[in-house]
Length: 392
Image (cartoon, rainbow, N blue to C red; front, top):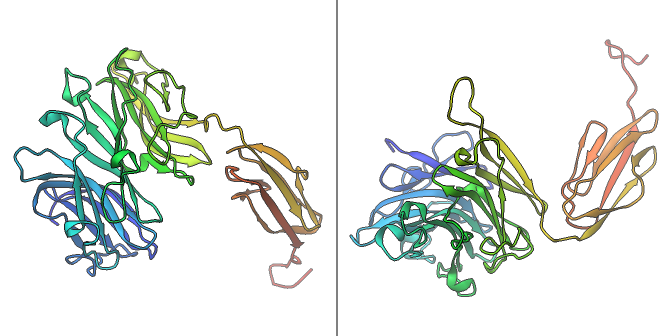
């Protein structure tokens, strides 16, 4: 590969590193050994190019399935002069890099979302790929549409695509493709662009979250998050449920003039069922400048209308205490802290439970999503030694 760039990365269970991007013409996957050197056993001396039947292609996201296959998504442009960029999904053998022919021709599916009616409004591409244990695949991306009639470039909307293990569209997922329009077009126009791979995730119950930027103009916008049910329907327990903006949440940091404020999500993770968003926000200009600057921005969204409570209890085997010692009734996705106090002459031996970690003398749980127990044991401190190695 003489030139190009990477957009995506995944680490296999064996520590090998898979990179996805483009060589400026074709989508490319490259695999490195754990020490960073090229893995020449993968594809053609370490690389796999998207089929050259596509005149242009690019990889935006890579993931490994539970059975070891590799998945990648992005876009591809066919040789058909009437075609435009469509969503590319490919599946490879994780050992050799050879295409998985059971998934489609040359291991590839190129599927048009076709959310618009003209050439420039039929563009789409996959930004994130999430494999499921049953072999099915969730692809999230962006498509141009017939919304915003005055400007095709301002008509983007997020979409979700569900494929079966054989690469066919899942008919139970709204026919396989769902395009979302979280914009009350009867009030104002907008453009909703999801972020790349790290800005979406799937919860344990199959619901999934899409985040990105919600633009009111090309120069202004807010943090955007949207939560969907496993079948792709809107999650009515999330967001404000304003007409035209169901199942979404918007964050405006409001640090500058609204006509110059652009806040954008670049990464999202789940904290239990709460959502953490990170990106940038417009801030007042520095020095004598007049244009807004950009700075780091983080926001956390609550989990919606779920008011489930869970019991968190603590156990210690003597010679030390955890405080509070009584069981606690904890709101869904909250974190709990315990003060850890060994008895005189003792120290902590082990402490575990509720997905937590010990920070100094405080044990902090992970997000509480089920009843759980924190257990601590204590042992005698070793005898002190002088510098010469002898006991006092």
